[in-house]
Length: 443
Image (cartoon, rainbow, N blue to C red; front, top):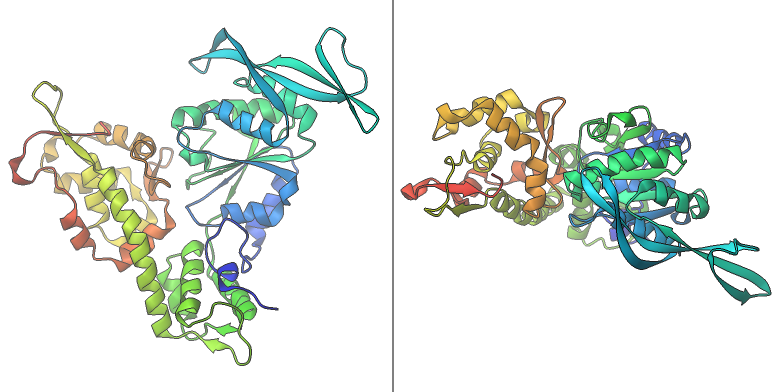
């Protein structure tokens, strides 16, 4: 059978053919979705979260919503209802009460189809279809309340799961609201599967402690060495190629990222002229093919990461009318640290105490760098990246462990294969040329 290289290796929105099941991940996920808890799948970017869903749940058994920074809870719920063919109409809004610190308003009537007789006091429309009477009840629901949404889904979901992709794109305020809503959905037997880019456990429990024991978390990391070998070997058989000469080096150069392994394998094959399954003797992938693939991916990743660095440290000149203390420029110094500190330390994660020490060493006003100010910056670092339209985020702070982690798996690869000093020198230093007082958008 002939397979296309792009279907065998690489990162795509559909299941790649070289996907392998891992006992500690796939089996745990299969058990989690039937035990009744909400399910959280988390890990760095491009580490197999979406593929885990595609491999273990058939398309007709779930409804998927992809989030953006502008998404709010009612947007998610309306999308789910639309996909379930539930019709709703806007009606006059009436303020009800406050929930989660914000005003909640009614404003939607939902049409729910029923077979047979209905309550005569409801708004009813009769339709004749295939000699069966279908009656629709038009009921007032508030799609901003999880209780109301649960009542609708309980009638219409029919055992399907609700998959929330890119949960990390949501603002922290929306994430917190949804963490409370999940408690309600769990009580009604409605299972959400949430996919997010972070690396610490109990992320949603930090928002709502009542979720403890009500959610099951599935980390997709780490990937083990034997896993990478299995992926490559499976792709070799499908394309009739031979990676034996460069397999070890390829895996080592990808720094524990399955997404990078997949992409480098794909471009090795393309560099060797393999666009689909070959016949005859397996085509041998050489060191030259690997070097070309690494160069190509480093360049592709570099464009995005350098742009992210520039956005992250974005500064504006203060006007004379603006008051307040001089910016401590934590965004700039964090990027400077990532571009100067040894890479092994970055892979292990940077403790808050280490960050404080290292930033003080390089800071132009070291005596003013206090632990509390750094903590405030780190606690808001995800929202800062959302504000700067950095998607997906490349760093995340684990408040419980007090450690900063890189969560974009391609960033390790890029930092290993780029000229870090050259990138640092190209970034705008806010304190060059005595230009005076600046403020960072973060602050």
